[in-house]
Image (cartoon, rainbow, N blue to C red):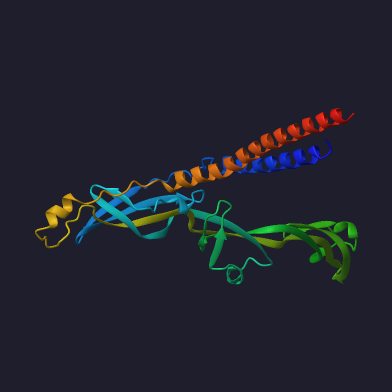
Length: 318
């Protein structure tokens, strides 16, 4: 029995090695996934000398594979068509619209002669939604505004003369005066005596405050057309050449041609290559399995017979 076990294990291993081959055949025999069919958007057929020209136009997106365009020979209305060429052409569209942009810049002056050199005559733009173009400065839209204001103050003075006063008394002199809209305060008085009277020269002082622009903001508009190109589609054209299927053959017939035509041997039946190779592969896989099973049966019968003979001999000798 010790010799039987290794032999059985070897046969089982040989049988197991045939299982992956069967699994591989099942996988290879599975129907492949066919790509999505592509259909032409236009078919143009023209007559040529002795044949026809057929053009199939396809409009493909980025998700479509041009390799799926049918290019095999085919028959149509008594003609057999063969591919000549496949051409490709970009298919793009564009959208145009008016666009205006406002720009601002700082300036230290409001003089237009100094402002204009700071503004470019044209401006290249790209919008957030993908439009591009060149805009032109609209000079009528230019405005200048103060960015802010500051203030300054200075001392102003004025003099007044008061003649023929009875006495050199400062109370006779006004304490304040108004000069150019400003209120000035008495600062000093000079007296002069003239024939029993007094002339007074009074000095007044005050503060004048003025405001000024600290800077200027220039605003201008640029206007013009912007364009957006819409792409992503391609035009493919498959060009086929067609010839008549039953074109007449020009040849001279002899007296024996009729007999030969009637006695022609019919062509042998052809077996599809796929079926032939499939049947052969199955037999190659089945035969080892059958041989293994037959070998197991024969070996088992042989070992059983040998075991019985050994047992009978042992009983006979004891």
